[in-house]
Amino acid sequence: SITRRYIFNVNLTNVTRLCHRKSIVTVNGQFPGPPIVAREGDRLLVKVINHSPYNLTLHWHGLRQLRNGWADGPAYITQCPIRPGQSYVYNFTVAGQRGTLWWHAHASWLRATIYGAIVILPKLGTPYPFPKPHREVPLILGEWWNADPESIISQALRTGGGPNVSDAYTINGLPGPLYNCSAKDVFRMKVRPGRTYLLRLVNAALNEDLFFAVAGHNLTVVEADAVYVKPFVTETLMITPGQTTNVLLHTRPAFPNATFLIAAGPYVTGAGTFDGSVTAGLLQYLPPPPPPGSSSSPVIPIKKLRLFKPSLPSFNDTSFVTAFNSRFRSLRSSEFQSNKVPLTVDRHFFFTVGLGTAPCPANRTCQGPNGAKFAAAVNNISFILPATALLQAHFTGNGRLKGVYDGDFPSRPLVPFNYTGPPPKNTLVSAATKVVELPFNTSVELVMQDTSILSAESHPLHLHGFNFFVVGQGFGNFDPNKDPADYNLVDPVERNTVSVPAGGWLAVRFLADNPGVWFMHCHLEVHTSWGLRMAWTVKDGPLPGQKLLPPPPDLPKC
Ligand code: C2O
Image (cartoon, rainbow, N blue to C red; front, side, top):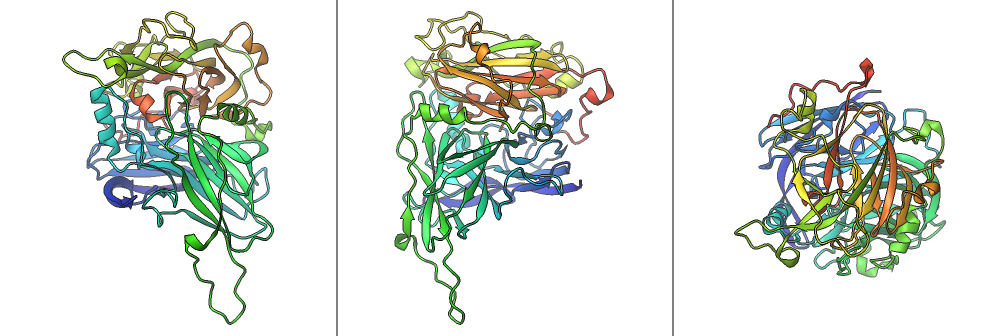
């Protein structure tokens, strides 16, 4: 293994999409940002120099950061932001993981434009557990706003209302030909017949679950969140914000001059609607080589191509999504699993996750439901970010005594109710900074239950520092006397981001073997902003290799 160094200059850069030219925050002037390519076992030193006017941090989504939360990145959880003019070196090792992950800004809504792929290749000489692809292509799905995402969220939080939705979905930053004023901003992938390509898919959208398909081609899913899965074939994927999925695409034996649309469009639950917005790119079969002596083949304008379009499921097709999600099974082979699913449980947690409202502050009018403001909570707690980083408070002794956080995050809702039925009169939500405190190596079972207080909605829950094993899911209210009998403890998929189904529940297990402070939140950015977030602290273990490392000298101060 080697050390790889990257310099990330964060700048304002002018970019034009949908005929809107605007200044966006980028890394090294690139949108999406530069990919990071490493091998399992490598050390990465990423120097982030902040030339932008924003306080920011970067997060390496899905990398476990063993004993090294200092490099994890969520603002006010593991570090204070890098202020304008400052820099910070993220210093971490890629241990025991290989596959596709991604990096993104982790302060406010800056990840709208600050994101890129992380490609972790297996150790030299270690093959993939699937046929070697001819080429590998990162495909990052995202969202484009004509307005400034930072002012959208600050306005939504000020008025208590819902933020505007984006103006387009994108593939590698490009909306594609189905949008007005976007004929030139099209992702193109040129392929040859009879070959195998590996698509490394990332859902970097701020606020949207997305379906994905390639017209005329099946996709073989081989990996999810940098863990190999038992391969399965599908026409369409659903990928939730935060997730990564690797698929193999086999091109047809002979199809000269044909072009197929690569398309992604939203999966909508709850009160959301769908405006028909679909991003598309082109899968273009290269024509046969020109006969010797003639000049090279001309570029064909889009209007003249033979275009094949895929059909995506209808925007609210929850039964497709449920069936699709239940097909993921980990490749049960010890060399490919970073952990083993815990068979016994030390501590059980039952978390309600969902949207609600909070009273409008005095002397204000709020634009949320019934004059209140939107809020979101886990077990009646709408989490508030502290003014200093939790990890520093935890490391320097007792964060609780210093008043930075409380250690009594509830392990179940204050008062049980019919989670998927009509809501109770008082949802007892309070705003607080509370964490769960776990001894080292605690085996945790967590059931996450969606609530229909405002409307049943699917929530992509992301855990930093660990992968979850998904042992069960279902609709309606979780039944602790019945549902655990159906858990899959044989080959559950291992992921860092899981989709809690709309009007249902999801059960996961993980082993708390990584000392530090670890954020968990909905990866729909607006839900996080409303408080659907919390943190776990894991104490040091007794042995030297079980303790949180000391902070690096350049760690930003608040
Ligand atoms: Cu991808 Cu806490 O984030």
